[in-house]
Structure formats: C-alpha cells, structure tokens
Image (cartoon, rainbow, N blue to C red; front, top):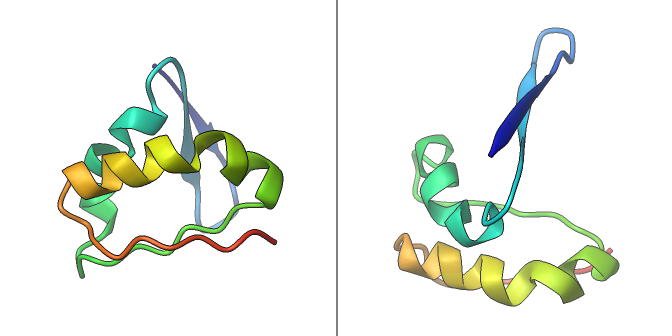
Length: 71
C-alpha cells in the first residue's frame, strides 16, 4: 500500500493506493471516526464498482447503517 500526502494548505490529507485498500476501509478509517460515524461521498460510477466491498469492510469494523448516495 502506498501513501501519498496531498499538501492542501492548512489541511493536508493522505491518499492510500494499493491492492486491498477498499477491503480494509473500516480498519483504516476508524482513527478518524471518533464519534463512531462516517460520511462517505462518491459518484455513481465509483460506487457501483466498490460499494459492496466497502460497506462490508465498514460493517466488519463495527459501523452499521451504511448508506450511499450517488452524485
């Protein structure tokens, strides 16, 4: 897995790229969801390819009630 840091002024963030990242999403996002809640925004093209695997990963990590809206 590769990590690329996007140097957005005042709010840099990391992008993870690699085999199996989607299946580890729940585990990887847990440190950022201190309230136990996540909001994921994607478009319909991306969601139709990865949403089932992504939602399963979130459920494995203990998140429930996952919903997606394509924009």
